[in-house]
Each structure stands twice: as structure tokens, then as C-alpha cells.
Image 1 (spheres, rainbow, N blue to C red):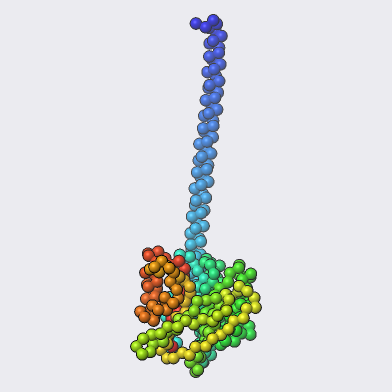
Image 2: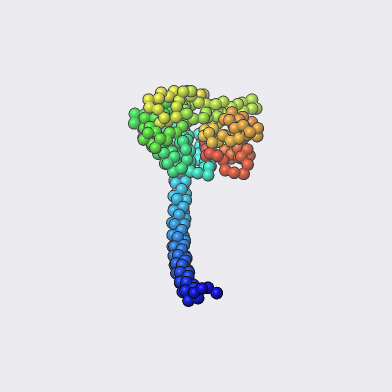
Length: 296
């Protein structure tokens, strides 16, 4: 027994009162945590909803941009020069595009461009360049002279005014009367010229040396070259995404590999696409597949 039972009772009552006060504080803290947790959950749910709506809007805008890119591509031609083509974007909207049009009664132009990078910005620049070429909207440029066209494009689209984006291009003009093809390249892969004779098809690569990507440096000089075109000849214009995949030995395919396939197996865009895809498992190609097929 304690020496002073009454004092001990008072002490115990005080301890119980203190413990009750602490319990009440814990309950208040717990209630506050529950209330705060519900508020946090509500905020997270709201932000997730906003994020989902934003994602849906961005996906819709990307689909609109993709539809626009395809809407400016030309109709396939059945009369000579006849054309066929394929454009298969990678997982992202890219900057590949191409076109062709009649300059005058004798001259027919065709071109393929590849803007660096992916996304809406690259696609918009690609569309702007194609529209300029299609409408012949380059001041003081003779569209029958490829080197002049590339120089004018380089002046019109400096990369510092295009969000530091530049592009490569293959541009050619066929003269029906002389059967000459004048062409120039600006940092672009060569075109593949196919000629069938004596039971076999020969492939050669058409590009001009020294031409830089368009917009990268001001005042660059471009040169044109000439190739004789015979009836039945074919020309393949392509972007680097058409062949830059890992081949069967693990090394990247080259334009020479693609030229050999086109000459020895098939030059049709759909066949070339399936051949390239055969080296890429089941996934999408790493870059846009763009191929313009021209038959003279």
C-alpha cells in the first residue's frame, strides 16, 4: 500500500486525464490525416482526368497533322512518267514528304525531302517546303535548274528561323524532248536509277557531291548533274529511313543493298517495304519509310 492512498489516487487521475488528452490529440490528428488524404485523392483524380483529356487532345491533333501530311501528297500517275509511292510513318509523326509536277510542256519535276527530327514541327516544315515547290513560289529561281532551286531553298529556310531544323532533298527535272534528267542533292541519299537491258537490270546511284543539308549553312553552292534517260528506265527516290535498319549480319543496310534488291528482285515499293521489314522483327521501323517510284 502506498504511504498516502489519497495522493496516489489523485496522481492516477491526473495520469488518466493526461492520457485522455493525448488520445484526443491523436484522434484529431488522425481525422485531419483522413480529411487531407481524401483531399489529396480528389486532387490526384482531377489531375489524372486533366492529363487524360490533354493526352486525348494531343493524339487527336497528331492524327489531324498526319491527315494533313497525307493530303498534300500527289495523286499517283498512270501516264508517263508514271509514279507509285509509299509513305509509312514511324511511331511518331515525321518530316518526310515528296511531290512532282509539270513545269512546262517538256519539263517534269520530282523531289523528296526529309526534315531532321520528328513531331509536328518537322511535319509542318516538310509541308511548307513541299507547298513552296509545288506552287513554284521561289523568287528568281528557275525550277528547271535543280542547283538553282536548292540554293533558293537554302536562302528561304535558314535553320535559325526554323527552330534549328534543317532538311535534306533530292530534286530532279526530266526533259522529255532531250531525254535528259538534271538533278541535285542537298545532304540526301542518292536516287536509284534502274535500266533493263540484255535480260538483266543494272542499278546506279544518282547524287551530287558537296551539297549540304538545306538551311544548315548560308551561301552554300549546289551543283547539278545530268543522266540520260531511256524509255522503260525507272527511278527510285527515297529517304534514309527506307534502308537504315539492321540487316541479317547485324550491320545496317545501305542504299547499295536496297539498289541490289530493286535490280535483282523487285523495284515495287510494297515489295521493298516488306523486304526492309523482314530485318526489323515485328516492331515499327525506326524512321519514316518514304519511297517514290518513277517509270519513264
